[in-house]
Length: 218
Length: 231
Image (cartoon, rainbow over all chains, first blue to last red; front, side):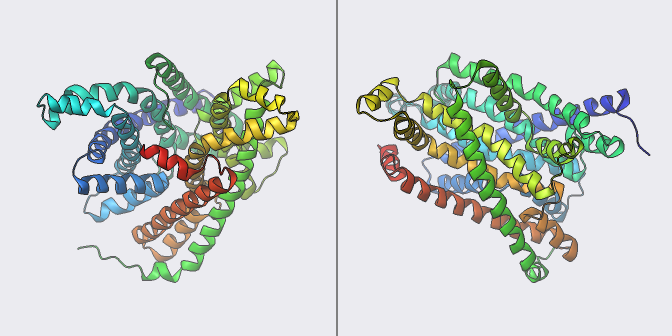
């Protein structure tokens, strides 16, 4: 039974946008929090913390996000959590985000001039005060454009959770395509929706980069 | 009931996994070579092609960079047959990787070319170099040398991204993982093994690309950059 690609199908796909957006926001918040901790560990004076952070970032950036998804999907239930796929999907996306944001923010912190550390240290600031009042405010400025740029990757990356049957935009597109077999229109619409979210963010990142006048450290 | 790890059944299917490794390496190698070639061509054509062609190239780059690889793969695999271009899953995967990487690579290489000062071209011309020689020795190679670390990161992302080709039933590493998993019912163990293999592959790829950089760009060598990075 073939459906035609009409208003209902379009609304179904557009409606699935809320899961794409929710997954993105959640993974950026949770992954951002974790990534912040890892970034601080990465620049910590404690050797063990530094190496743990290096290892964490290396592993997350060295394996496909798809593997993080499968490991969360099959691993979390073994820990005794009986969870819906949406949770495994969110956890894996947050892991992925944390590994990349930690590295971006590590770079931002390290690109603050080292004299700033010395100057604040000579004012008898504690390490927390140094970070809070001197280093991080300057690092944030440097970190903003690449962070927005990475958020685009985070949005696009939510598409892979379609494989564990979370009905976000990519999965909605698959379902509609299976019923209508109109791949150009269906995936064209899906691509358009992603583009509508990502392109303004890409432009924003480029504008911020010019405005804050920080060269991308790639 | 506590979970006990049972890797035995996974090792018994290791030949399947090795087949997947081969396919992943194949997709990555061909995709990276074609994508790099496309990226170089697009970056180099800037200023040489008429405005409307450049507009089309810019639109292509923006579209690719702002939509997911998965959707590009679906459009090519399910869409192209409708206009008479029949591709099997592997061909569709290679084409998508090339089209995807080409856009990213061209942006990276363009940044490298923008970094070359126009006076360099004049210097090249004043040494009686031909246009082709200037192009090769003054523009292309120094630009590539400059952005090689960025390209390396992008190539690693491309290799990791080949895992998504399993969505259209390409039997690369993650595709072979789902076969092993459904044969053995040891899902978690299977994915642990495969994840470790991916990690090794990405380390290996980084090493190989580092070596390529050392051979291709001896003057801007990675070792030198490393020393400069230490300051």
